[in-house]
Length: 257
Image (cartoon, rainbow, N blue to C red; front, side):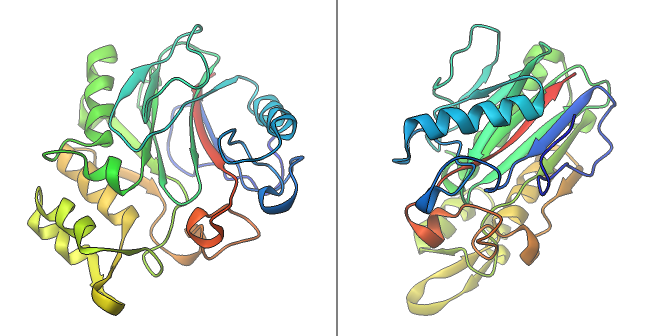
């Protein structure tokens, strides 16, 4: 696997047959606010440029990335050779080789999963809505449930990698976001810091770590909330909708070789 310079290769003890990568915004064909490796078809970019960018991404991985229509929900699907791009879901699981579970982001948190045996991989799109979910059941709960259903994987057998997202120094949210997490987990209040005009600064990667640990997933790697992982704070490396409003999307992917 020869990835373009600057892409992120997760540093975690995944089994040898499991591969993962996260693109950045460089190395593609798009122009203007989408410069240059925008993978999102839904953000107003030229369709030809996006198609070229997706081909670059696929060629770099050496497998087919399945691009979902992400809606900030909790639905998780099992990928197959016939799963079309644009299928609506915010989580996906793959047992078949040659298919990459792929999550597009521009501030939300991509979460990749595998197991020690390398028999299954998964990915989740964890913005605050999908992460908080309903009645404590969000996208991370949905993915781990699906992993258990299709592979028998127990949470203790899982490992997770958190990709780049909006950082805790800049993720300003309203009281409704804080309330959504506290409704299920009152102690999550510690991950919200008071900010200006009744707003709060939320620690999205740590909120995800907290949910994963509550599920029994204790081996968690990647984004530690430091500035280098922040999409907003690194404009030359990452797309950010919060920063730019008109923005492309980069992607994290995981697959079985």
